[in-house]
Length: 302
Image: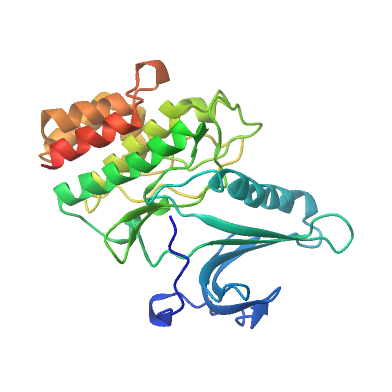
């Protein structure tokens, strides 16, 4: 997703951090606004001095006394650059550059420059017209199909990682958990409520794993405003592999109940059957063709 050519930014649409003062610059990049923060990282809108373009700057720092804990966040930034740099799709946020800061040979900070996407995550938009929602998920499925064609799985798809930009396009973000298809991860990583059972069991992450997450995303958007609520957190520990709280968590565990809920919401049999197929606990029984899913979703939207 190559949107990094912007040279202007409407600061009124960004979330400037209140707890800490905004740095003037980070390793030569002029900081314009705060976009959010994580455990060991912060996101900023920043100007690249080499190109004078506005990017999203992800700054990951190894904190004193938390070296082992923070190493995984540095690893995720490295992983995001390694995988996203191999992708080229209009609905995938592009990555431009990585800067590694080594004060004592070992990497202590990473600056990751990503394309700036001016938009809102789907989980913050509120209830959507059903046809519009189906087209948004179809656009995400197109991007996921490209990812799968390149041999990778996203491994953390959810409404919060699908951005509706100012042009009305869906952009898939956050490839920190992405991995080559067939990878068995050493610890549970993902978002409760959207993570497929095999990922919680530390089995191979496949294309079907991403399709489960798209199914849960689809169900969450259908339930939006109906008391489902957002599943919690972005990474669970090895001992907490269950789904998050709320109706969504219950339904994703039982595909037949999820299908019935879709029918009760007026989604119709075809949409209910699709959700039931996507949420199968056995990935071999799960609908697993992202490109085909996109076509079917657009057909339903029409």
